Amino acid sequence: MTAAPAETAVGPRRRRRRRPRRPAWAGRNYSLLTAAAFVTSLGSHGALIAAAFAVLESGGDGGDVGLVAAARTLPLVLFLLIGGAVADRLPRHRVMVAANALNFLSQGAFAALVLLGEPRLWQMMLLTALGGTGQAFFSPAAEGMLLSSVRGEQAGRAFAVFRMAIQGAGLGGAALGGAMVAVIGPGWVLAADAVAFAVAGSLRAFLDVRHIPRREPGGGLLADLREGWREFSSRPWLWGIVLQFSIANAVVGAAQAVYGPLVARDHLGGAAPWGLALGLFGAGTVAGALLMTRWKPRRPLLAGTLCVFPLALPSAALALPVPLGVLCAVMFLTGVTVEVFGVSWMTTLHQEISEDKLSRVSAYDWFGSVALVPLATALAGPAEGVFGRAPSLWGCAGLVVAVTAAVLCVPEVRNLTRRTQPVPRGTPTGDADQEQTYAT
Image 1 (cartoon, rainbow, N blue to C red):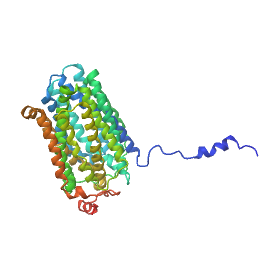
Image 2: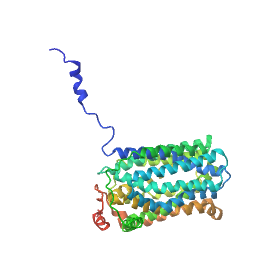
Image 3: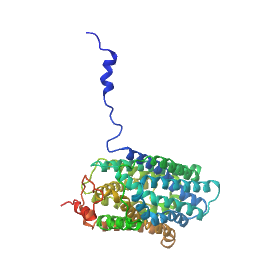
Image 4: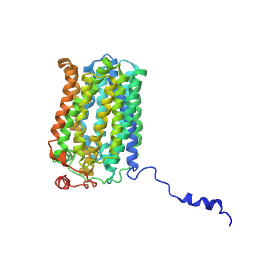
C-alpha cells in the first residue's frame, strides 16, 4: 500500500475543533469588565497610598489625611442613589465611561498639582471630591452590569474569578504604589492612576448591552428611587448586612486611611512597609477568591458573615503595634476571609434581585456601606487627639465584632440557601420573597 498524501494525513487534525480559550460563563462583556476592573484596581490601590503621603509631604497631619479621604467619600454618599437610578434607566456602559472620564480628569489634575508644586489642602479635597462623584455614578452601573453579564449555576465561580482578578491587581498596585511613592514620589503614582482610568474607560466603551431589555417609561427619578427602596427595605438580610457594613466599613476605613499611614511612618519605616502590608491583604483576597472558585457554601450569607469577624484584626494589630511580619500575616488572613464574604454577597444578590433593579439595589447597598465613612475618617484625627491612637484603634476593632455578632441575629442571614436560578426580571418584591429558599 502506498502512503496517504500529506494533506490527507493531516486533514483530521485540521478539522478538529479548537478548544475555547475561556469557559462558557466568561462571555465578551464579562471579559471586558474583568480586564477594565483589573486596570483600574491596579492604579487605584497605589493611588490610595500616594494620596495619603501627598498630604503628609505637603505638611499635613493625620487630620488633613482624614479630610482628604472624607472629601472623596462625601460626594460618593450624596450621589450614589441618583447614580443607581440613572444606571437602571440609561445604558449602563455609557454611565461607566462618563464616570471614568471624570476620574481621569480629576486624578490627572491632582497628579499635576503634586508634581508641579506644593498642593493646597482645599485643592486636594476638591479634586478628590470630583473623583468620588465619578465613583458614585460608576459603582451601581458597574455592579449591575457585572451581575447581568453572568448566567447559570456557575455565577459564583464567575464572581470569584472576577474578584480574584481585581484583588490580584490590588495586590500588585499596593505593593508597587508604596515602592513608587518611596522612590519617585506620590505625584507619578497619581498620574499612573489617571492613565488607568482612561484605558479602562476605553475598554468599557465596547460593552454590549443589547441583551438587556429597554425599560418602559416610568414615573421619573423619584419613582425609581422609591421602587429601589421598597426592594431594599423589604429584605431583612439585605438591609441588616448593609447596616452592619455601614459601621464596619467606617471604622476600618478610618483605621486604614488615617491611622495606618501614621503607624507606618512612626513604627514601620514609612510608605513602602505599609504598601507591603496592604499588598499582603491583597494577596489574601486573591487566595480567598481562589478558594471560592471551588467552594459553594450552601448558606452563603452565614458563611460570609462569620468570615467578617477577622476584619477586626488589622485595627488590633495597628493598636499594639505589632512587627511588620505579624501585621502582614494578619492582613493576609483578613483578606482571605473578607473575600469569602464578598463572593457570597455577590452570589446572593445575583440570585435574589431581578436584573431591572440591580443598579438601584446596588446603590442602596453602596450608600449604606459608605454613608458613615466620611464622618469616621474626618473624626479619626480628632479622636486620636482626645483618646489616643491605640484606644481609637481598639474601638474600631470592637465595633467590627459587635455589629457582626448583631447581624447574625437576623434569621435570613443564618438560613438563606444557595440556588442556581436568579429572580426573573420584573418580579415583584413579594413574589421574590416567596421564591427565597431557606434551610430547615
